[in-house]
Image 1 (cartoon, rainbow, N blue to C red):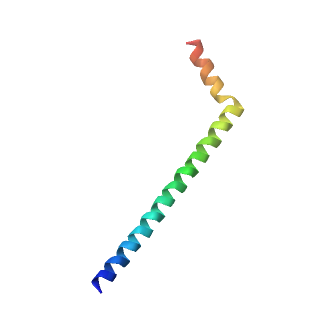
Image 2 (image 1 turned 60 degrees about the horizontal axis):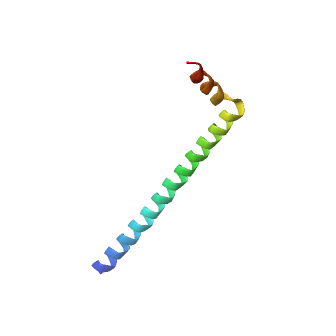
Image 3 (image 1 turned 180 degrees about the horizontal axis):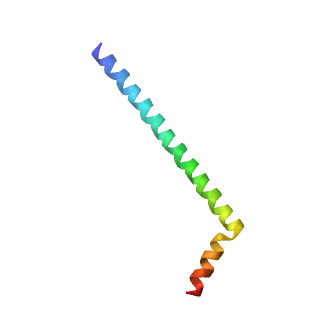
Length: 58
């Protein structure tokens, strides 16, 4: 009976760990998408070019 209880607990832990890993991956991919959007909008509006031009002048 105790062995069965232990197996159940370890299975719960494995499922929990899997869920946490999936959640982390989801958050990472979300943040990467946000960063990608910010970078593309920056290049579209030329903010980066302005920064580089200022660096070249100094």
